[in-house]
Each structure stands twice: as C-alpha cells, then as structure tokens.
Length: 310
Image (cartoon, rainbow, N blue to C red; front, side, top):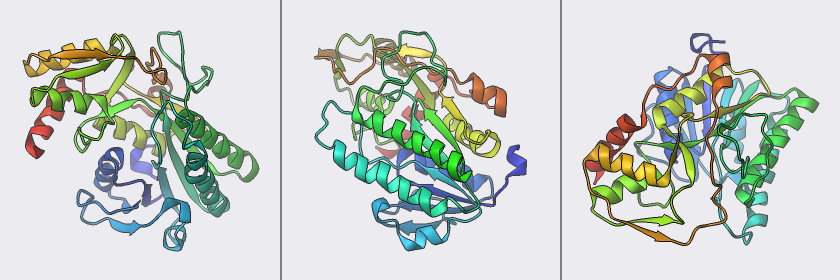
C-alpha cells in the first residue's frame, strides 16, 4: 500500500507532545489526514487543524477510546528513559506495559492499525556485529528496553489471537527541530547547543561507543512508510545505517559548525551499549524508504533551529 493508497483517513498520536510526536504530527497533517493529538498536556507546536485530547495515558480516557475506529494509531508514549536503576521498574510496567495492554484490549475487534515506536537500541542490548538486523537476538540491559520488548510481545500476541493489525518500528537516535537540547535526552541536539553556547562537553567513558543518528524528517518518513506500506505484524529497524562514535560525532559537529569544542571525560555508564547501528534494509526494500539527509546537513539544520529558539 503506497502513501497515496492509505487505508484510513484518520491518525491518532499517543505521545504527540514529544519531539518525535510533534514532527510526526506535522508530517501526518501534510498527508491530509484527520489528526488527533493526545498527551498529558497540549502543545502550541501541533498543527492548527489537529483535534486535541489531553489526559493520562494510564487512565484510558473515554474520549480517546471513542475515536479509535478506522485510524492509524501511533504509539510513542514512554514514561521512562534508559537508566541504571530498577527503582521505578514496577511503575514503568504499570504505566507503559499494562496501560498499553488495556488499549489493545479496547481495540482488538476494531478497524485500526497500530504503529508502535519501540527502541532501536535498548531492545537489542550488547551486540558484537557491525549492523543490527531485525532477526538479531534481543537482550535488554535496562528496564526501559525490557518494557519496550514486552510491549512488542503483546502486540504479537494480540495479532495471533485477535488478528490485530500493527507494525513495530525500532527507531534509532533521531535528532532535529523540536528536540529540547536542555532536557538531557537527545545527544545531538544537546551537543550542538553546548557547542553554540561555548560550554564544555562531558563524555561518559572514552567516547568510543558507537550510535546510529537519523535526522527527524527521515525518521518520520520512515514511520509513515511503515504505517502505510509495512506488512502487518512485522518489525522494522529505522536508522541511518551509519555509525559514529561519540568522539567522531563531536568532531563532525565541530567541523560542521566551524567551532572549537572543549571536552571532558567522566565515568562510563553500564546502561550504554558499546555499538548500536541499525540495518534498515528491510524497511527500504518493502516500502521504498531511503535516507535523504546526511549527518553534516542534519547538524546544520538542527543548529539553525536551536539558534532560532535561543
């Protein structure tokens, strides 16, 4: 099914006030879909014609449940971040996993397609291969990844038992406009912000950990391609396919912005995997998606946006 042959005319975003959610909302609006944005709080950055529903995801608001017919449902909500601690693991399971199951139960006999945005890094854990494909083993090393993987499992179960239509997207490290550089999440935006404000950059460990960074427009295009053209029940990696160590990323930012960036090293974190580079060939082959924005261009576009809001 191509983008011009969408099955539904309505899209609902769970977690629409976040960085990916805002960008996805604009991408969906550009597709001409009726758009419903749901989150705990509303955002002034949402498209003006979007219907807004605010509430607590875990309370399963009636107003939200009522509109979940003949719709693409994009599930971006996560109450936690990758962390060394298991202190909030029970809350993560209750808020994210249990709540998701309640929504699956509410939609198991309804005409919808779910698009679950999982984690492209933490579900795979430590891997000693150059490029990770979807068939690689999953061995999370933090509660965040384990919860994401558990949610994936329940989507699969609901498809087997109730023929629920869904696709899962294991997203890499997106960056770009609307990513708050001061929230501590999103290393590219944070590094660019510090570079522009002439702050020293702190690196955990020796900076040799390798990650896959994808510009947000490529990420949202990949999400839409999977939503409109992906095969039901499939898992799709979504990343740039090109890895950079933290040191290489800082060097690329410095070169792209023509800046000197002071660096200091601190203790490494065991929650960080050594290498995570996603192979997105499956998504490309099945939907025609491809990368459009290279890292140098993406850094400059992100820097321009940060300058604009600063």
